Every structure is written in structure tokens, then in C-alpha cells.
Length: 216
Image (tube, rainbow, N blue to C red; front, side, top):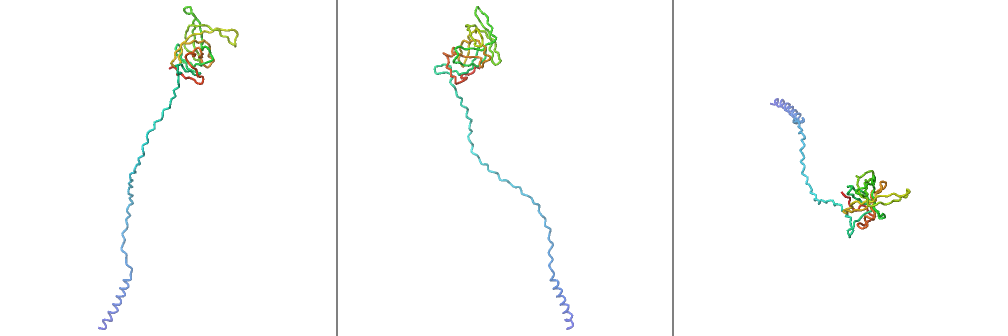
């Protein structure tokens, strides 16, 4: 019996030692599964609708039309108002001409070229053209009212000029007046209106020009 315990005791001691050595080992960690990275999917950003701020509607401002100053064309007693320069329409030539209104001149004159005197029914007539700035009008023929002698300071002696009557129009005034035929091609105005025309029908304001409308 004693021999049996002697055999068992060393065997039991060796088994305990093995157990202690076994329990002293580090625990084995379980195998970790590989982590699968999920794709980074960006979520669409939903923009919130912007709230439009209504602006107050401004009233439409219409441009103001320029104020046209109406100049008086006649005096209170019905006489024509004339400036120092006016447009004169000659119906016989169907043309407008610039005229100088001269308060110092007695008679009117018109620039005449190619003057040809002739007789018709025993009376003196003349045919002529008006030239200004190189432009000639068509020919017109008028009876001679009288002849006047003109003395020129640049030449000796005298020469005579024909005086004719012709219809002219200024504004709404149509009047027949006398003109002395003279070469005025070297002057600024082909027509000159003297006192014999406007003394009873018009008033002159030398500070103004072209008061009357140009005939169309």
C-alpha cells in the first residue's frame, strides 16, 4: 500500500506542474475578420429654394417733351414781324432766297444776271435769271415799270437799271413789290428788302433772324 502512494505522489506532482505551465501561456486572440471599407458615396446636396424678394415696382417716368417756344410772327395790329434776315419765296421762280431786310434802303433789289431787254406790245420788258452761290434760277420775264439811273463811285458816268414788279411771299403774306435789277452775285444775299416793301405791312426787329417760316 505504501509503495502504491510512493508511485502516485510523484505522478500527481508532475501533472500539477504541467497544469501550471499550461495555464501560464498567453491566451490566443481570435482571428479578426478583415474590415471592408464601404465606398464613400457623397449624398447629393439638395439646395433649398431661394426666396425671391419682390422689389417694389417703380412707376414708369416718361421723358418730358421739350417745350417749343412759339415766337410771335405778327404784331397785335396784324403787321408781319421781320428779322434782319428772312427767307423770301418768289412764286415766279418757284424758289426760296435768303433776303437781307435793310431799314436803311429805300427800294428793294434782286440779283439779276443775263438781263435781256425787249419790247412786247410796245412796252419795255426784261428777261433775266437769279444767280446765287453759283446756282442759277430759271428765266423769268417781267414788264419794266421804270428805268433808274445809277451812278457808281468806281466808274465814270451813269447807267440805267430796270425796275420790275414781282410777287413775293414771307410767311403767310403775299405781296407785289418793286425790285431794282442788279448784279448781287458778289454779295451775301441775293435779295434786299427796303422800306418800300415793309413800311406799311411789317415791323422789323434787327436783333432777330428768320422769324417767318420758310415756304415749303
